[in-house]
Image 1 (cartoon, rainbow, N blue to C red):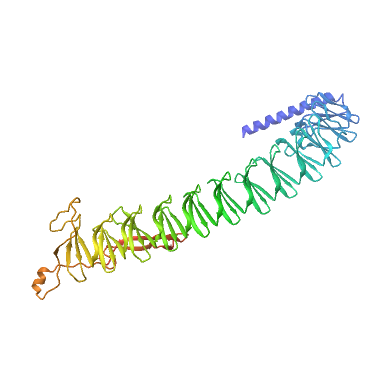
Image 2: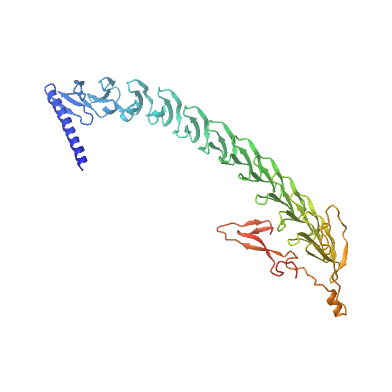
Length: 553
């Protein structure tokens, strides 16, 4: 509070001293002039002698003697000008009293641009321009309007007979006044013009970039978008043609660096400099930039290109699906499916099989494809497209307990190892394997016998056959025989017979469909179900409850 009081006190004292100083000057000047008035805003003194007025600076020195002008005004002292009036006509001097515009030279002048060093003058709807030295730049009568709105940008907007143009600061015409509208876009660095409803573009030096012949001309996405007779085109900011005015639609993906165009109902893709990646001959086209692929449709058939336009899958398919999660491209042609690598190399070419499904070996890193032909026969391929099991079987399952692949053909079963080598031909009605010992049944309700497989040794020997000494398949000894009339004999020879679980086909596992919570998700394609399913749908391989995971009952 004390500090504020001191500030106010000093301000009051300063004002008093200033007022006292001015009063002293006025008192001393009272003997020289009839009247002395201080302009408090500028500190200058307006003095009167008879019917004439003059001006003194704040120190009391005479600038304009009270001998020539009827009135002197200090409105624009801060801009460096003094308004003078003589016989009802207005003029302009500088702060030394030197005449810039003599009273009566111009009927009116625009004082809004004093600070920019230019003065817009007018008389009877005719405009001209002078600089702050009084030098005439644009004479009266040449234009009906002169605008100094862009004078700081080095140009002057001129109008004549309702048409607009541009002059430089020397009065030289850069754009003749033939335009119906001119807009200076300082932010993007160009001048937009319109002539009789047609739009064009000039740069800030007033060089023509795009002639005013287009019904639309807009700047966005770093390009000038033009339209003429319903067709679209594209120019660079320097006025170079990127796309000729013959497109039906243009979509710019500036961040990704490509442009999608439509011409004559066909779609294409080009780079940002207008070079075609894909000629506009496609009926449909979708660019998946993060994946690096272009999906195309030509004559009703679908194909796939990379982001540079190189063909990966030719447009001969009914469906092309890039499965990034599983690492392949899935195709469909008619009822035939195919699997391709991301580079387009065929793993399983389209045309041979009606269904291809991923096949995972439980407790193993191996992954295969189960294929199904038109006769509903199944086979097995590895990820490189090598056939492991021919398409001769009605069923293929994996026994994750004993780690072998069980195949079925009608009423007969066989076995393959995980490398696709035949272990047991598909000529038996049942197969059982316990601790590496295989038992087979040659006919239904017949005896089970031990089947010696290369790489596996009979349980009786409790040793494994050496891989470099393969053995031929041979029946060793009978294990089970039908019941006889002698109960005691049956008790001595009958062994418990295992029956394959019909619910899990002897695998001990079952595939169960489950649903995870999904919020606002769309339907999606399931590669296992081979159809569109609800969001959140997934498969889980669980232990079979009917055999408690043993595979047998």
